[in-house]
Image (tube, rainbow, N blue to C red; front, side, top):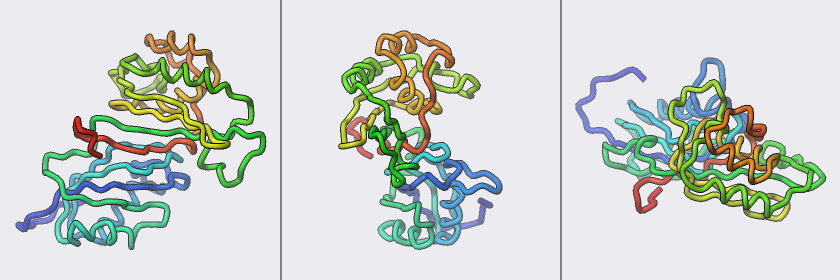
Length: 254
């Protein structure tokens, strides 16, 4: 956004945002494409006289959802902090919502201040597909062995080289990540993979899911030694993936 001269003090905000990613080409704004960032910026321009330094914790891909992604930014000339979420929601489309707004220290950075991120991936495991889950879960009618999946998830915990679980053409230079928690949870017809890590590589969660569905646990051990992408399984579809939490600080504050 173009800079404006303004001598009045602004507010450094932390916005917690939820969205259904089905109709978006991911987070990052792109010319001629509907993106979450594009819609958020359009709303900010209507509500604030000026905003700057907008940063997001997780740049989610096309079709990926979020319960609690986080944005940080500076604002001037708008509503008070306690009315910011309400004001923005009046101009945001119905598939995006600001669920919380907080004034934070100017040093807070939505991406670099984060100490962990959590995702969940939903698999619909019944024989009949559901029209209500088509963009919200991965329909997998074949039998799944939960114990085998739990064993694979337990192997993921710790520091490993995850280059097998991200596209081979990548901007990443460091492929080691620390997974703090990983487990599978049964929720009726839906099987959910829940994972928390310090950070994630692009497509990492979706490729972990696709690989666990295809491979034996012993194969996961070998893949975590820096194997090439071609050795791992397919990348699961984006509609089943949800960013559920961004953690800040050692005390686990969101």
